[in-house]
Image (cartoon, rainbow, N blue to C red; front, top):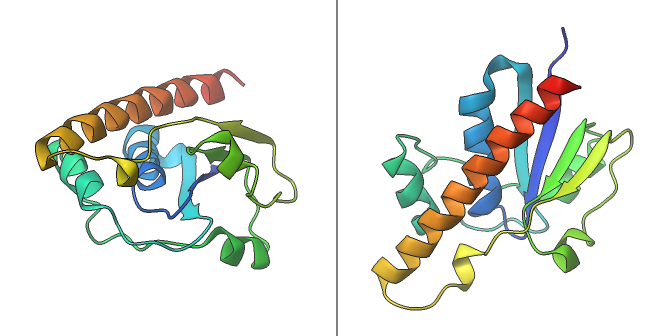
Length: 144
């Protein structure tokens, strides 16, 4: 049985797409081949690293990737899931052979203001919404 190939995309591959990738790898088991990328390569967001560590998931050593590098390599996916706002999602390349493109719009942790604790609290909310979306995605894919 071949694995379902999933690409999570956001602006800099620094937080939301990294969290989604980590959750699908953890919760989806070996049914999925999962990658993440950004419109541009960024730097891992320390807030995302911190809130994922609270879940027992270490993303601190993850690389950030540029989606156009994947596109140029001719990588194919069954699903491309954007986790940024729709305007940014529209800038993503169209991958040949994509089965389905999905947009999940989540708040960007890099845009947050306030104290560290305030930003951490909102990033936890984003993390929890991403986890719920990933769990729902797994259920939907299993139905197909």
